[in-house]
Length: 310
Image (tube, rainbow, N blue to C red; front, side, top):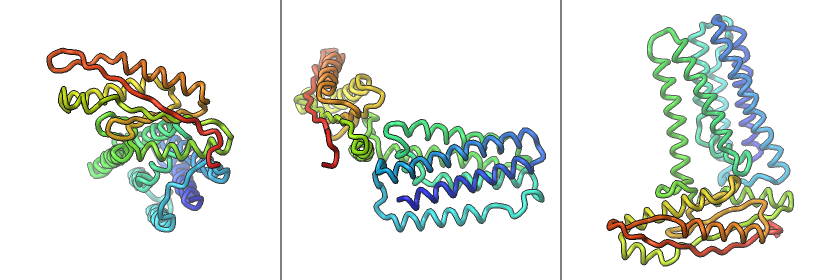
């Protein structure tokens, strides 16, 4: 795992150094400013990976890789291909060629593995890194669309970069999110739970976990139909997510079961949270097709992990 993170550092360091060279070599001052900004952002990316290596060394990051050797080989190939796209001498190429090189650099950084690794950067906070990278990619895509002068091919490739990024995010969402409620699914929850356990173990902090079961959900389906049942699940999931804290994670654990991971939560606080969840669901306003109210309620149980891993 550490060697994989080191390859991430190497790839972003390579991108940073080449953006710095482009900034000093290109003829257009506005484009030079774009390249300068790209280099600064690549330095931020290097910091992300370096911090993740430090966290790994401290035992704060779970190993998400099943085939370390295979993934390391894949990333080494990416790194070599990335190096091969870099011009030998930026001083002898045009601004268009530099934009082409930039597009190729970013293409290799769109591999789905980087998105999965970014999810480990900090428990519950990976979204800000995804958003930062989206802005980074959009910066170079916008520059290609604005400054490229030789026909439409590069602009087309720029749009492909944007689309590839969005498609990769969608695939990651499909893998970790429940299609009905939009909450994390069991797979997504377990990956975050492993990470929170690592942090709790390191700092000897409590970690709360609640399991939520919809009461007599079969009756709702049998009486009102599965469409109303699906709507009930969506509304319950939404009520749970609106009730928990920003640092908590809500997941659809099974058919009519949900789970809440609550970091830094002791038994008393977890009990209060469970009561709030029950009340929030009881206040849901749900009607059947005839406008008659459909009552939904939940049962909640939980536990606090005080000594993770022991």
